[in-house]
Amino acid sequence: QQEVMHQIRTIVDSASNLSFDIKNKMAEIDWAGWHFLQNQLAVTGGFERDALWFSIKSLVPATIMWLRVFRKSTPEFFAMTP
Image (cartoon, rainbow, N blue to C red; front, side, top):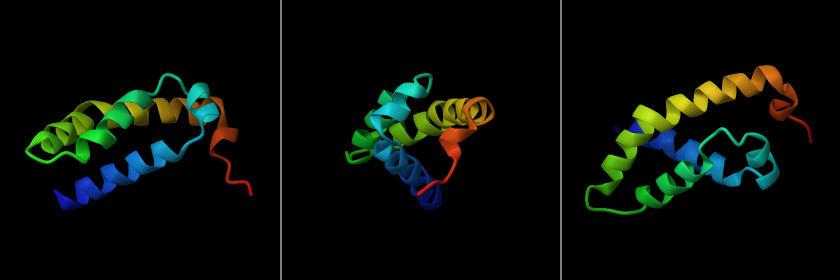
């Protein structure tokens, strides 16, 4: 469970660091859901488990699906340029 939490936090941090422009260009991804998840993971008392379960069952699969679509249609979004 700790490794799963670590991976989810990595995704949450990455999503929060994306520019507004990129988020707008990939509007199909649930950025609000990732922001909500970030807030829920900071809460204790069992809420973080519910948030983690939601992310595993819904948010992660949908995000990965859309990232695959965007990687094919707009590879420049994924180019590592200085």
